[in-house]
Amino acid sequence: MIAAHNLFISYRGRNILRNASLEAKPGQVLALVGPSGCGKSSLLAALNRMTDLIPGATVSGQITFGGAPINSVFATRAELCRHVGMIFQKPNPFAMSIRRNIELGLREHGERSRAKLKQITEHVLRDVGLWDEVQHRLDHSALELSGGQQQRLCIARAIALKPQVLLMDEPCSALDPIAAERVEQLIQSMRGQYTIVIVTHNLAQARRLADSIAVFWTREGIGEIVEHGPTETIFETSSSEIVNSYLSGRRG
Amino acid sequence: MTNTSSIKTGSPRSSGHRTREYAAGIFIWFAASVVMAILAWIVVDITVRGLSQISLSYLINNVADAGRSGGIGPVILSTILILLVTLATAVPLSMASAIALTEQVGHDSLLARYIRLSLDVLSGVPSIVFGLFGNVFFTITLGLGYSILSGGLTLGCMVLPILIRTTEQAINSVPVEHRHAAAALGLSRSTTLFRVVLPAAAPALAAGIVISMGRALAETAALIFTAGYVARTPESVFDSGRSLSVHIYDLAMNVPGGGPRAYAAACVLVGMLLVINGATALLLKVAGFRIAPHFGARR
Image (cartoon, rainbow over the protein chains, first blue to last red):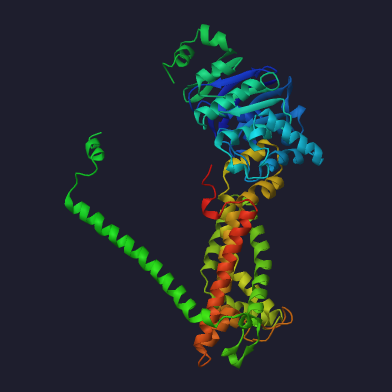
């Protein structure tokens, strides 16, 4: 569905990621794991061209969507973002009402009908299991919600645009264990509907969630992908010394 | 690791150290109490001497006997008009400048640094200098005469530097995560600015405007040369008008026996400031924002 081919990323001349290739198959969950600072989040940001907004960031290599280069599939960044949503580590709802949080992106992408907006809002809030908790206070500030609720709102806001791909940058790591579990269950339930690429430091979570996995490692100060394949294969039968010791908790 | 024990047990420290901490504590509390006492003194003094003279007729009647009797109706009206002119010019200008500084000119570019430097210098210029400038430029060169318009425009120039800097800080204090979220949703730059960043900055923006209003309300020197002294009810912004602070100054300095009435006017001025502060807080609350100090605290 979405894939990177021979991707190199650098910030202000400093190489972050070297020759990274990976592929997320339609409807599957791909987990990016590895120690901090090895380019996982940078790769994720390159997939929806968030890297364009970071001064000094250069990306070379190719990213394809459904087999074709993203720049030929999507004429603008806005168009790309409509099809490739993103969830961040820290829940970041806008300082406005719950309803407006969801409607803002929809309006920007041309949805004007009030009835339609209302219907989509209810639909996505039900999808993330937030509807029963917030249906009577849709016009309250989103900042009044708990961290876990905020994160689920952010997911609702992203899926309101009906993306095919969801990029998630450690979506559970800023949440308490119970809220994190809710979000993880939510991701689990979205399997099949969306292609999900998720960065996580929680190996157990990666194993529970992911169909396939890419292990990142730093060599000579530059991140690279040392192994990429189906989750069970990598956890059970990896031939790489680094991967085995990382996945079993002996390194990293 | 070596001083773990001293951390655990509190402080097996020298008694000299403890005495010093004790003294520092006393001094800090003393300083804080002095500040509070001064404020309390001013407020109580003004209220005790002024409040008893304030009545509805005082607030709406015309000035009589150079302010020794009658009311301050025209003065309040002039003050409000001057404030409106000030805000109507300064707020849009500073908003646009601050947006240019934060969104267009690179944050650390040479141009931005020079703009900031000149704003800082400008905000340090004494108000009487602004008054002279306003007198020469607005009343004489532009031919606006001694008028509410001249006074308001002069005050607009005066509060511009503070307003731009507070607006710039308000915009910059919006968490970068908001911008990331907006970018990830494919929102355009203008949507991001007007629908995401500025609403999130609203409490801090409002705080900047309230501070500027306070400055403008307190201003006397710059207005004497520009808005003038006339205590009649202004018929338009082209008429001269006397602001509350000028009225207080006049009563206290130029009118024998005007002292008690100066306190009454001061009381009204303080009341106006309190009303503006309260109204802003209420407005933000109604609009669903937390009040400034809490902004960004809950993340």
